[in-house]
Length: 253
Image (cartoon, rainbow, N blue to C red; front, side, top):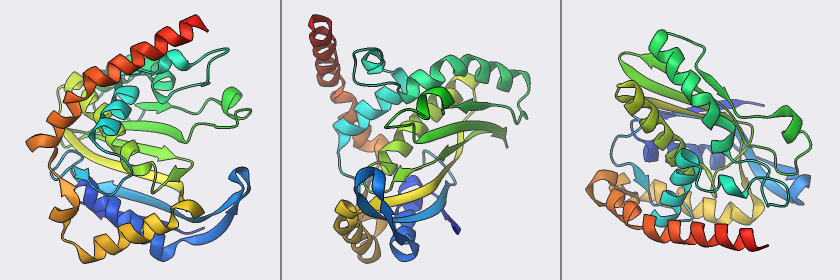
């Protein structure tokens, strides 16, 4: 199973290249756990500057509100209350790594050149019996060249429906860690051992690739700092109102 590497100066550039690589190099394979087929390859995309502009791609099934909620789920754990007996989730990524972050900060402050700043997301006992085991497996931080770099590894990643939102959420965590440690954000490396598009998303993937080939990058992206960040942050009250309403409804059940 061949593994591909694509690189970009910005997140959208690297992400768009990864979509094209999947479209060009992917193999059609069965996906019996979801009773479908998929186009699949194995891939790493490398972003030279994780927060460089333009930061937002237009080629994902969502908008500013969805991105804001997802980053809050990753960084702040706003939906961790859904975990537990009688609830709908067995884990969240935030729940898996939050207790590990203090040690990560301590290790990196003690030894900036450490190779041990790894957060394990996979829980063997839970994920081997879970119908929806964690796709994210690990997160590793490096301080090199006076910057904080982050490398994540996923066992499985839906290129069309999830990858861009995943990356934005993980880079939000990288921003938080960098601020805590007092370093600027460096590179972001995203590895997906199964980088795929399900059969139902193949027409969307084809359209995205057509747009990437025919349009300038400026036409397929937004700058985050100029206005998209404001749009995202303006959606926070509505998101929290819905989260709190869900909490209350779950208490009554």
